[in-house]
Structures are given as structure tokens and as C-alpha cells.
Length: 285
Image (cartoon, rainbow, N blue to C red; front, side, top):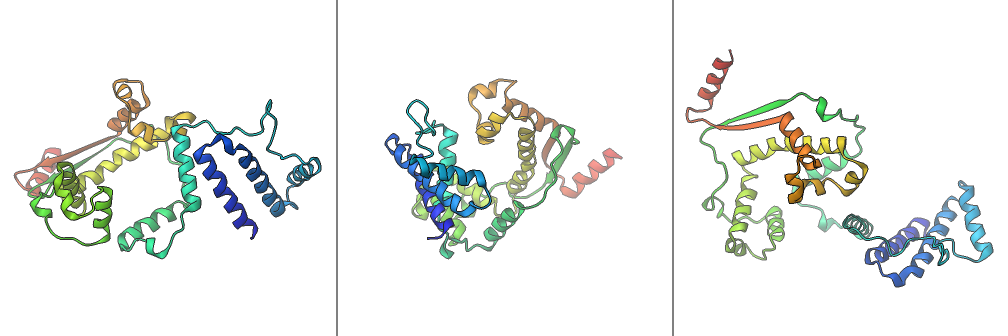
């Protein structure tokens, strides 16, 4: 087995043990770390002298580098388990073990386009964004007249067989189409799901409100502490009741900055779009 496959195999074993956190596996963790060190040493022995000396010292003394002693352990195992640790270790294990096949590639061309665009954007040489508090305030107005806001139940009772529909059923934990109509919550989600794929006001409003979400995320990166960034934006996006009531919490400050920098209004016009715009223009001039 080559260097990289061997190292990958041992990494998967190590991450799996760390994911389970079984204290009885401490000896196995020490052996795996030693084996991984030997693999890396064999790969880079001519480039990193200190690594080679550490490896040779371990051979001479016959002691595992990561064994340590009871009074002074070399590794902390089992690790201190937190919600963030569990999420990150599961994600790492998934990245190491998932084997993508052609059958798992989305068949929907729009899905492939979006995934491809996102992955390519990760390698862009993007300049650092300026701070949110320095940006100009802006407002958006969407006049609408005689358009669908959200599709009704009758509008969506049409058979549909495609990949997106199958994924939607799986997300709702529905095995067949008829299961959706058994819960009002599922029907509401279906109406939103269909409306966001048509020319509806709902889709327009959601798209514009992404500006607010982007401002909050950028402001989070500007003002969050190292611990808050490590906890992740999700911890702020889903705040506790106490954080919602506090005016000094990070959640409250992000909301205030978004309110200050972005305003959005959707206006219902009985006069029609053209008449409404003409009236606005006349008032401004």
C-alpha cells in the first residue's frame, strides 16, 4: 500500500475512535498516531530533520512517542466532548469515508451548475470585504400587482416526477406523495417549495431578503470574538430566548446593524405597476 492510501486508512480509524470516544481505546489511539508518524516520516524524512530525529529516538528507546506516562500523558483522550466537537468530528469522518459514485451525482442540470459554481468560488482570490458599518445604507422597493404570492393547495396538485421532488419527499420523511397531505405543516412546506420554483412574489421577497442575511453574516465576521467564530454562525442565527431579550447580545447587535443598513418594502398597488411607478416618480421630482 502506498504512503497516502496507508495514511488515509489510519486517519479514518483514528477519527472513528475519536468519534465514539471509548476510553478503552486509548492504547489503540497511541499506536495509530505512531503509525501515522512513521508514514509521514517515510514520506518527508529528507525534508524535515527534526521529524526524522524524533522517529529515530522512538526506535532507539523502544517507547511510543505518544504514549507518555500516567503523571504526564502525551495525548488527551478521550477528548472533551462539546456540541461543536461532535459536529466537526462527524463532518471530518464523513469527508474521509464518503465514496462518491456516478449514481450519486445530481441528475438535475441546474443543481450541478449551482454546486459547480459554489465549489469553483471557493478557490477565487477574493479581496477582504470592507467592514459592514462603513457601507452605505440602501433600500429596495418591490411594487406588485395581480401576481401570485404563494401557490395554493389546488395549484400544486399536479403529478411531478423528478429528482427535486424525490429529495423533497425524503426531507419531509414521506415515503409516497399521499403522505404529504396528512399534515398541515407538510402542505405549507410544499406550497413554499413549489412557490420558490415559480414566478411568485414569495420567491422575489426571499431573494431580496438574502441581502439582510448576508449583512448579518458579514457583520458577525467583523465583530465576533474568536470563541464565537469557533462556535459558528449557526449558534447566533438560532438564538436562545435570553439572547433575544438582551439588547447587548451578539444576536441583537447583528439585528440592529441589518436594520440600519438594509430596508425592504413590498407594496401592493391596486392602480397597476406602471401607475404606481409614475406616481412615485412625480412625487420625487
